[in-house]
Image (cartoon, one colour):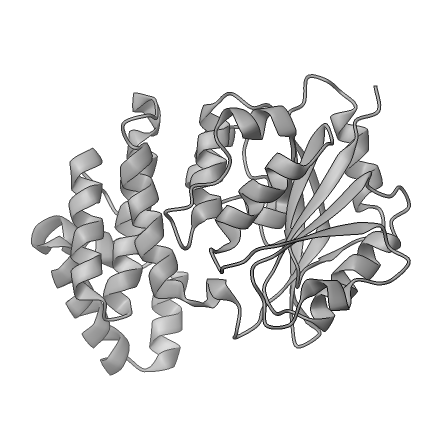
Length: 315
């Protein structure tokens, strides 16, 4: 049976970018069945930027509560079999809906995941942000723990999203990371479309540019799902928390980094397998903070061409 699809867009003062997003929906070879826009109490109302000939419904909030609350409101209001969450500054390829619907015609598929392209100031940065063409692997939960899922990459059976309670509203960032892990844990069956059928615009004013808060919230998400994942995946969570801790150290956020390492150690013993060989060796004997201090001195003292050779050698 042909599944109906709703596009659920969260908006906060993106203005003309929303118009461009909606225009990319209007150009679909197989249009979605419903378009809902959540205006998160914007200064510039979303309704002013909806093309007159496009059948889009705007839900306007009376206070700003963030995209997770908006997505849940849109989810509740939607009437279709399947839902796709989207940020108002991102775009669709013309065949997006047609190809996603062709996958979701199969009742055994609960979730269609496409790759994503990214642009900065109109120039292509990456045509496969998630790396699905390189083969992300067959283990959906492991992929999600590794961060191989973004808001615009997925279209889901509405019933599956309702069953897990939608998005957490207490995470201001990395809410999509938590969402996809919980969806994978629920047993949702996913089929991958390796082509980039949506594109994201990398903008300095985007919420996700607050990388420090993204990392803090990701560590919280790791902590909160640790008791729910099967034993075989605990090491993946441990390494994820440890990797975030290393990034926080490099950004000078020592207290947050130490909390990330504490959580990593509470789940298991991190091997820092995703760090360079020298860092792993130093962390084994002196801990990650010592390893990062040595690595920092190394980066400052070694000439760039030597560092490149060391990177090539895997050090």
